[in-house]
Image (cartoon, rainbow, N blue to C red; front, top):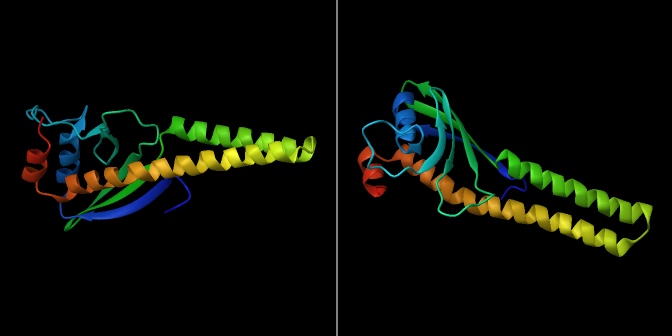
Length: 165
């Protein structure tokens, strides 16, 4: 497990670039292909002609759901996907904001007022906040990666039949 809440991955698919992006668009809300209303969307986001920006559809809100950013390049035998997994920008902002605030308080208590107990509490809270954010991110990352890889690797009939309304 990485100690930063993001990851990178390079995937190879036997599907052509167009087929892969079309398959992603089919299971993504907002860019779903016309004529397939019976499919339940698996992702929210956008799929363009060169890449995608998607996140997994979930039933209950979760601030630590990973955002999948991808770029697809065509090859003679399929395509290569360059995928980044990261926190949404608002979640990243609040994580760094509270990390900075708690670090500032701990420095103030350690250096400014010589109150080591309060400084230690602030430092502990800062560490706990960061560790929990990383833990919850990676807890959501595995199902997102698994679903994404299922969509890009399986034949269209198995993806469509397993995700009907």
